[in-house]
Image (cartoon, rainbow, N blue to C red):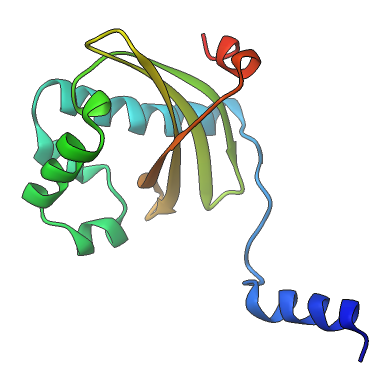
Length: 144
């Protein structure tokens, strides 16, 4: 067996067959996804971590209590916990997973960028992960 063929075969054996590429979301999916993330930010603003936790995916909820979730957000993502302004970039999805780029301005005025990953659970989008990302100045300008 040739090395390129073996590498391709290994890729298909270890890559889930159900992974579908993401595409630009419809207006309705964008509204739903952004609405979930906006609702979680509103809960953070109000200090309602139980409500913010309710927007998390079930897998995350199984790993963390509400108190642990609150500590994680406040300690690991203080700009999100104490935000001043939020804006949303493009939303992409495949019907089961969605990704949205979020610009967050903290109370100190510094803006940081995060990739929110959501999953579809029981006909609702839930936040399954957040990752800080570094964007080029050109992409940053498109986040208005």
